[in-house]
Length: 442
Image 1 (tube, helix red, strand yellow):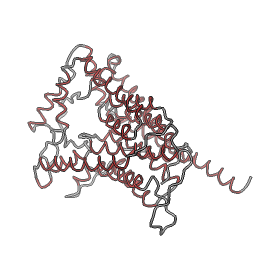
Image 2 (cartoon, one colour):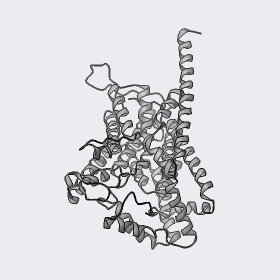
Image 3 (spheres, rainbow, N blue to C red):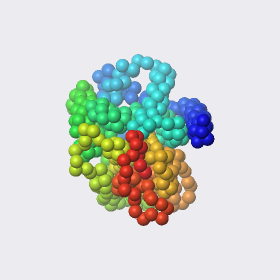
Image 4 (cartoon, rainbow, N blue to C red):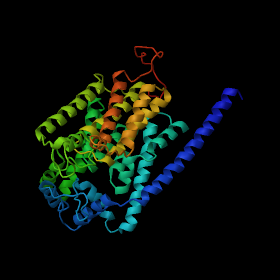
C-alpha cells in the first residue's frame, strides 16, 4: 500500500471516530433537552383534536387571547394564559386518532418522532447535496449539536420538525428527479402550516411543473379539505384570529418571532412584549419598512433563480447543485418575509446550512466559510447580551443570521454557483466547470 493510500485510510478512520464522538455528544444533548421538554404545543394540538372529535370549536380560545393582546393586559409571566390553536384544522385532524392516549405516553412518542424526523431530515439533506462521506456526516452533526431552533422545537413539541423532514424530503426527491414525490412532500408541509407553500413559487419559477402541480393539489386538498371537514364557516373565524400575526399585528412583536416583521414591530410599534426604540410608535413607517425589505428579498431571490430555459429532462450535475442552493435561498427568504417566523421554525435553516457547509468542505473559500460560520452562530445559538442599546438587537439575532445566510447564497448564485478563484490575487471568478455528481462548487 502506498503512503498516500495509508494516509487516506487513517484519515477516514479518524473521521469515523469523529462521527462517533459527535453522535454521542448529540445524544447527550438530546437527553438534556428531554429533561426540559414541556410538550406545551403538543397539548394545544391534542386539546384541539379532542374538541374536534366532540363537535366543539377548535378556535374557541383564540378570541380571548386576541382580546388580551389588543387590550394590553397580556403578560408573558401569566401562567393562566390559555394559548390558542391558530392553525389549519389539518393538524387537529391528524391528532384525532391519538387523542385518547394519555399525555405521559403520547409526549414521549411525539418527542421520539420529532427526534427521528430531525435526524432523518439531516440525512436526506446530505444525500440531496452530494455523496455522503464520514466528513459530511461529521459536519452535519456539528451543525445539529445544540442547534437552538431544534432545541426549542423539541422542547415545546412543535410540528416544525416534521415540516423540516418534509422539506428535506422534497429537496431529496428533486435531486433524484422524483417530481411527484417532491410535490407531495411540499404540499403536506403546507397543509400543516401554510408558509412552506410559498416554495411552490420557486418550483413554478424554475419550471419544475410536475412538482409545482402536485404540491398545489396536495396543499389545497389538505388545507381546504380540512376546513371543509369541520365546516367552511371556520374559515372566517380563522381569518379573523390570524390577523394578529400580520404586518403590525398585535402578536408581531412576540420575542420568538424572528422575521423582518418581528424585528421592525418590536422596535417601531407599541406592543405588550417590549419597549420600542426611543419609545416610538410608528406603525405606518414600520409597515413601509417591512414591505420594502421583503420586496427586496423577493425581487433579488427571483432574479437570481430565474432561468429562461425549461427544466431539462436530463439536467446536468451543475443544474442540480445550483437548484439545491436556490432551494436553500428560498427557505431563508421565506423565513425573512413571513409575517411570523417563530424561533422553532428556523430548524428549517439546517437544509441551507448543510448545503453551504458541504459546499465549503469540498472547495473552501475563506470569506464564505467565515460568513457561513457567523450566520450559523447567529441562527443556531441562543445569544443574550445585556448592554443598553444592543440588547434589543440581540433579541433578533436569528433574523440577522438568516439575512446573512441568505446573502451568502445570493452571492454564490450571482457568481454562477462558484466562488473558486484562480489564485489569492484573482479579481475575477473562475469560469464554471462541470463538477462531479453531488458537488456544489463554491
